[in-house]
Every structure is written in structure tokens, then in C-alpha cells.
Image 1 (tube, rainbow, N blue to C red):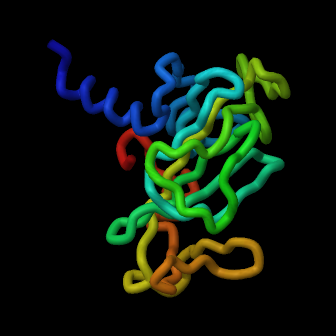
Image 2 (cartoon, rainbow, N blue to C red):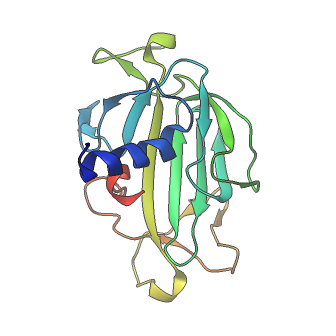
Length: 181
């Protein structure tokens, strides 16, 4: 019989990687890469394998150069979920996505590393997941960091400005995805 900790870890993994069963975590939260603390987790599941959304939410940015998408999920406890390094993306800014929906295909765009060095090939293919807990407008304090997208401040569906909960935690406000999924 497996431990409850292992069962919980497997459940969290299923939210992140969907139906892909052969993923390997290549870098955890907090690991050093490129001279800075790693603000997410990386999984190598195979070049061009589907990347699934672990949340229902709204896509708020897309950067095809970096292969990144960001979506806002949740209302009472909102989060900014970011996935990076995708080869392709299948959703656009403003799209509503469901949990389990394909967001794109795994790739190596942006700063991808393999065997400790910058690599621009399928060998470096992985998906980077980062989660930033947000605070609704009612809890905003003067001088806090707000989410700025394009030429305007991001507002949720209720026209509330959102800010990252703890922007000075050493990881630009990101939390460990395996603990705050």
C-alpha cells in the first residue's frame, strides 16, 4: 500500500501532465539555473507532446517567442498559472479554457537547458510550470506589485485589479507548484 504522501504527489502530477504518463521532473522549484532560483518546476514529457491546463481559467497573455502562456484561474483564491517553452500554443488571449484542455505542445523555446547548458534542440524540450498566488483588489496595499499586461493593468472578470501575493519571496512571487497547485 502506498503512502498518502505518494498518493497526493501522484494526484498533483496528474493535474500538471494530464494523460502523459512518461514525464520526468528535470528541475524542481528553487533549483539554481542560469544564476537564479528556479521559480517553477520543469517536466520533460517528450518533444511535441500535449500540454494540458490543470485549471479552468482565462488566458491573459501569450508569448510565442518564449512559448509561454499565462492564465488566471480561481476567484476566491486566484492564481496566475504560467507554462513556458511550448513549441506551439492552441489558445489565444481572452480564451476561456477548461481543466484538461490542450494548451499547446511541449518544446524548447526561450531559455531551455539540457545537461546544464543552454540548448536549442528537442533534447532540451520540457514544460515549465509556475504558479503565482494573487490577491484580489480588496486586499491590495499601497506599493504592491500589480500584473501589467501589454499597455494596461490586468483586471479580472469583476473588474478588480490583481496583484501577486508575495512578490519579494525570492522567486518573483511564485510558489512551489507541488505545494500550491
